[in-house]
Length: 304
Image 1: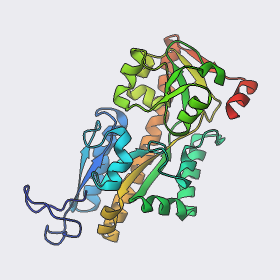
Image 2: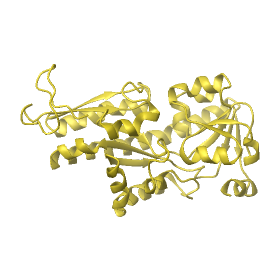
Image 3: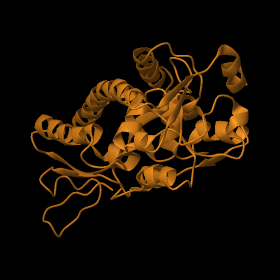
Image 4: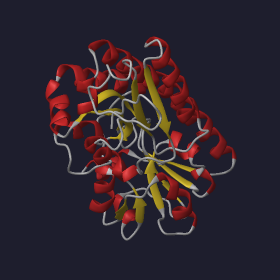
């Protein structure tokens, strides 16, 4: 919802930049809570856009899902409820076909930097991915892989798919499909409910990465952590989306400024996430949590 405002009480539609002195006002959405390292970076991102545009682009950040809740993200940007938003690939099942490659499990990356390089190369080398999103009214501004995903459990350790039978797990996209194929139940719950759902026994497991475990303090309510080798279950793509009408209403210079800033964010937050991963693992090990390393035979059952 690109708003071009002359006075606080007056709003203009896309393309009215001339009437507002050329200043552009954009709304940005993130479901993550305020005060964690990743959301703190949004202030720096806005400052970067403001500085590089000489104050002609003003972005207002809406955090903690105050503009769009987690399950509403893609639809909200597509419909123009938000101009720009963080979006987790797989967060809107059935929306994509080609773009789902970023959410596939067991892609076999040997390191996080390798995954980062390949995720961005895919977006450049296969314009069909961007075209698929533009058909839905959005454009990908930037993308990065999330740190490797694991299964984190409250009471029951998970080693093989059969262990998931009858169990409820918070999981999105293909990770939810994995839980379901293993005769479990996949629950798509907003991050704000993760802690209480695990604590109260509404769910018994969560399939996520260590940065999320830190951000939402999930180590306090889980005890077992099933690892899947260096690449984990996979590395879901985390992107920044912009409404296509908003994007098309911007000048080429404005597009370049906004795209550069959100690519800068991805590099910065990736470095933070890896640090959080190492620190969170070390902390939980020191507290006596159990880390389960699967054997090759056990991994083969998950691959199937």
